Image 1: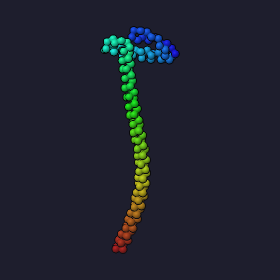
Image 2: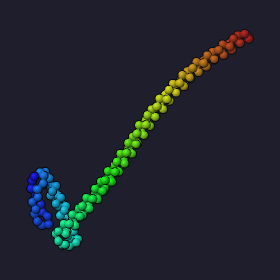
Image 3: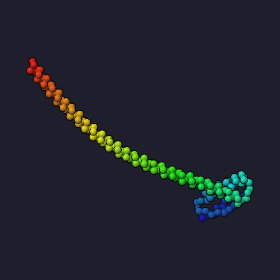
Image 4: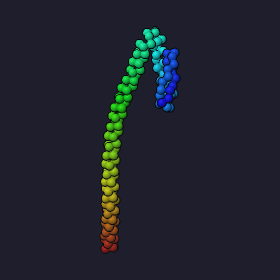
Length: 142
């Protein structure tokens, strides 16, 4: 622990804090002094005790508001995380379905290619037979 001299409401106070926290303690004291002096300016000198109480209530109100906002943000973050997981699950499912469909289409394409090749062979065979028949007919006719 180290001692830090802070000034509040025109008086010096010696306070203890953890080593390395001296600057933070000074900043916090300055913020408290600003709030206290603003209240003193706005409300007049009601007495140090009453002004300190009102200052403390304002600080606690700010803290409560921040905590409430933080809880709302955490809840919103949890909702977003849940939605993200749902989207990710749908995405993975969609990718799986798409990959399966692509494989089915590839297989179908191969079947069609095979059918086209068979039809070409059959067509060539039919053309050859028709050509031979025509040649045979012409040869017999002449």
